[in-house]
Structures are given as structure tokens and as C-alpha cells.
Image (cartoon, rainbow, N blue to C red):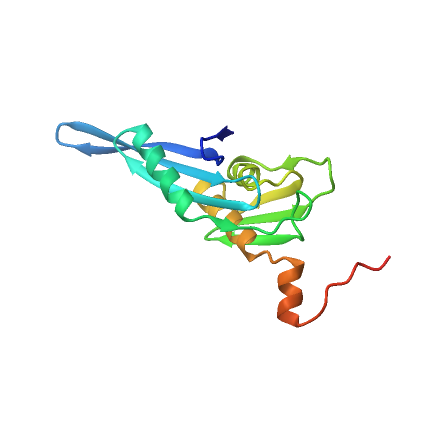
Length: 163
């Protein structure tokens, strides 16, 4: 986890060296998948490709900042359970009680840490391709709606839960 000068959390999800075989030998280029978040409910991801690693990372980070979305959080966890889907990637995201921590692997963990979730249970189903898992996670998070948003749509007043 790396905090930059603007207060964003940047996490590298995957860094891939790609070889193109040409007449004179192999040409290498790099692709970087980066997640950027503010640790307070905003997260974005970007893919950058370049001849050098630093340039690929810079491009990915730039794109991630442009694609940031706001996620509703409730006391450091998610408001309710949801399934995010993208391609063959499916990610189950489940709220957890305080003190559980982030139970997630790879791309999902990077997103959760960047968005500022402290307690969550997750499971990646179907594929372990970081691109699809990352997009499925973001898809699931963007589908979440806060209690205020739902009450506004339904035209009902928010009440304290009954015991």
C-alpha cells in the first residue's frame, strides 16, 4: 500500500511483460493494472501499457484517477451482501463485523484497501484473471446503494431498525 502526495492510495494489481516476436528478436512492452482510492469510499482502476515499467504505471494511475467512483460504506464495511460479475469473473462481497479484517485475495484485496473498507468477507468465483476479478469487484461495489438513496427512490422515511 502506497500513499502518494495527493493522499490517494495506489496499489499495483498486476504488472505484465508482453513479448512481441519480430524479425530482429523479441520486443518487450509492459502492461500495468493499478487501483487508486482515497481510503474513504472512492476507488478507480486503470490499465497502462508502455515500453517501460514506470511509464506504464504512470498511465495506469492517471486512468485510474479519471475513472473513480463513490462507494457507500457503513462503519468500515459494506451495507449488504452483493455479487459482482464481469465476463467469467464473479466476486461475492459480504459485510463483516468489526475486527474481522479484509478476508480477500489479490485484486479484490487491493480494491478493498484502496476504497477504505476495513472489514469484509469476499470470494472470487469462476476465474482468477486479475483483470476480470478487478472489474467484477468494481461492478459489485458500484451496484451498492446507501439506505438514504433507497429511501429516496421509494419515497419512504428512514427509521431506526426495530429490535
